[in-house]
Length: 74
Image (cartoon, rainbow, N blue to C red; front, top):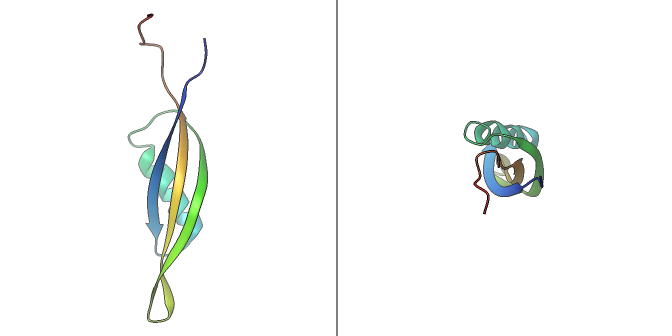
């Protein structure tokens, strides 16, 4: 049987670091998506307030395996 993978994009932010923003993206996504295989950081950016970094933002591509055990044969 072939494995089917799906990729979704998730936006996340943190007050502290890019790493925390990525960890938050994975943790929040795992609440509703099973079988997460990997996370690829596509973009990083920050917002600035009063000359200092305010928020760390990431755009993450999350790959997960699709459960085909209940799929009907065509």
